[in-house]
Image (tube, rainbow, N blue to C red; front, side, top):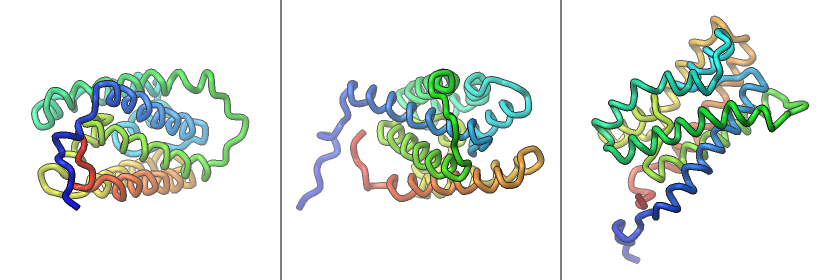
Length: 204
């Protein structure tokens, strides 16, 4: 059977909006679980977690500010549409990740379960955004560029960078929480590596 013409598989604006909202909600839920369990993630979100835990910053504010330098890179290499969608996604996560904990109160949550569920939720959130030509900025842009320019799987590139950043937190975060954070990063990026391969998904 002949593969469908990619030009006939364009997402509609409504589909893109729906994906933007769903993807960022999944990521924000993961952030809420991580915060409750004292975990962190990789990438610019990991840096925002450290700013939150150590400096008392709002996660949302820190996350938005840390991502600012990456928009130029996205604009230059990924185009205006990708950059604007990514900016919208970052703003939504910044807002929702600070809003959700005020309305979603968790009485009890095992840290290992937070790592597993958070990794799955965040990985699928990234996947939804990637498939609608958006990301959450930061190192995710570098991972997508590596896939686009070099053919490397975005999930594998992201996994390497995320693990390095989480391990760098050993100086400030308890060892057991760092170990669970690494496990969460592995789960997250396995979701992406398994489901986001060049040529597998052609809709734009």
